[in-house]
Image 1 (cartoon, one colour):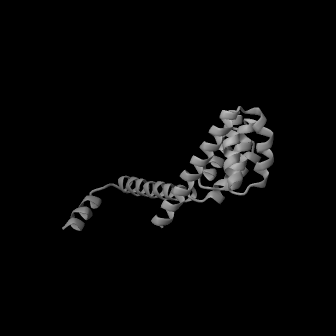
Image 2 (cartoon, helix red, strand yellow):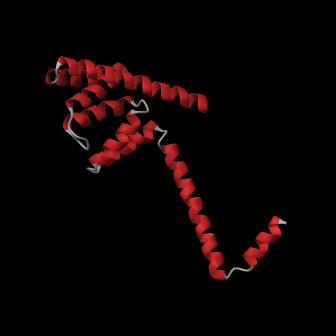
Image 3 (cartoon, one colour):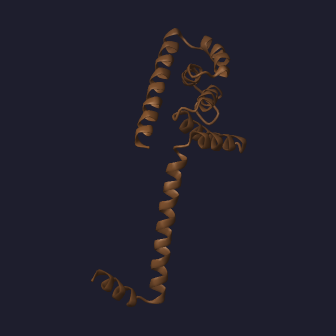
Amino acid sequence: MENTNQQLEIDSLTIEEVEQLILSTLLAIKKELSQKNTRLEMKDPERLFATSVTMSKAKNDVGAAKYMRFAALQGHVKAQFYLGMMFAKGAGLPQSVYHAYTWLCLAESQGSIEAVEAIGKLQPLLQAKQVTDAKKQAADLYEYIHDNQLQSEKIV
């Protein structure tokens, strides 16, 4: 019965109305596919990191920082290091030695050799309490990232 009603509704439309209906349906499908692709891309830290590097080369520091942060929050160690350096230089982000130190500590805790040298240069610029707080924040970030990774593995 429902197919018959739909057929009658379509039969009563003009060509322009049918074209408009087809166009709106195709646009809705395109939007849904685009959103699905975006969600999948946002779960791929390598792709996010590569996007950030491409944006950085194009001198889009704000966009690069945004994608670098996405990759860093998914556990990409190089992204964590570069995000720390971006905070240190104020590239696409407000310059912040504290935040730079936090991200660099996180990268160092996961084996980044480059982060060790950078931390050594930044530490004298911070007070002892700031160093302690930044290390605590890095530990909190580590737990957040790895808890999310465990959740993602359970879902998949």
